[in-house]
Image (cartoon, rainbow, N blue to C red; front, side):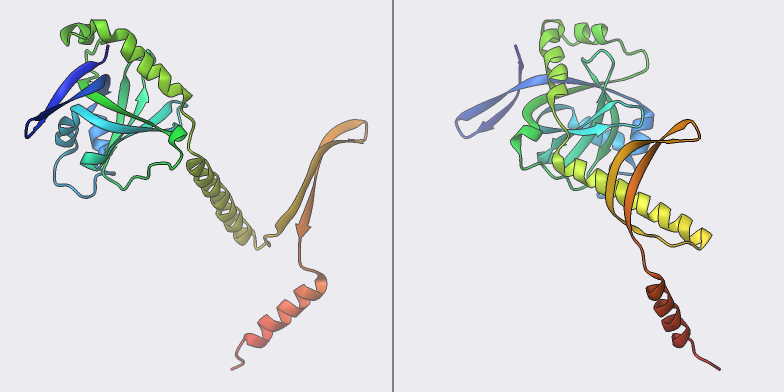
Length: 238
């Protein structure tokens, strides 16, 4: 059963939010990393993190995998205009804090690309942290199944299409820049690949090779000559 917490009183009405415990294990290194993502606050990362503890309505987005192949999630807390980035720990019952950010966030337009729910953020430093002891000290032993189901349920989240397209564009642009830099170093030209064929096997000198046919848009000799003449004519003769 989810925990009941955080009561708001407005006139004669009382609203009680139902929430799911979300346990975050943090390190001082995560606070140091957060300095790069906290731009509009005078508070320290630790102070901001402490203000997050408690119940908040969150939107959870899967952000792909880290360099170490861990799944990465963004927990957006719109009321605080903050995001916390976490990775699930191996037991899939709690999370490790990566960093906190106050940078502008974008919620996907497709509801299937994120989860919206009330979370009760609880935390402990990773030094001497033991999950079962933490549950016992915080009267959460009966919530174990709920916590486990919440963490494993996030595995069904897919990376938003916008994020995938942005990452692909970033990689393509980086490859272009790197290629152009290498070509400029060698004083060679960059050609546009118009069409990529299929990989086929070719036999030569009793050996088999995999070949790939590319249709390249390259300037003709006439175009090269015209370009060279234009460059020469643009020079000022003293």
